[in-house]
Image (cartoon, rainbow, N blue to C red; front, top):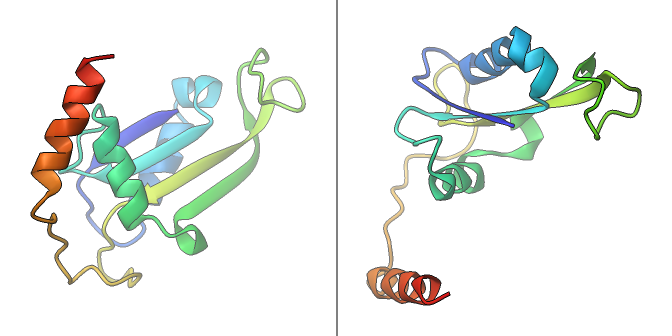
Length: 127
């Protein structure tokens, strides 16, 4: 899996970036899934990536499945050795003329969020 953070330039840009990743030599051989997130999302911070997936991705239009692409012959997900379907997930905020979703309403944390996060971190540290 590859996670890419990019600045959107035009509608459909994230999907174009995903296609480019899948067609590089490394993408052809190793990547079966590409997740594209906005530039303000750290691709190395999985909670941020999961937030982008849960708030900006709509399966109706943000999943691109590409059948029968190359992959390493040892890839366990390949039905036929060396061939698999690949997936691009667009978890970015739409840019015109892409007109999907309602992103004008700002979401704010609940007042007790900081307390819950501190408690969860404390529990995780005790493991």
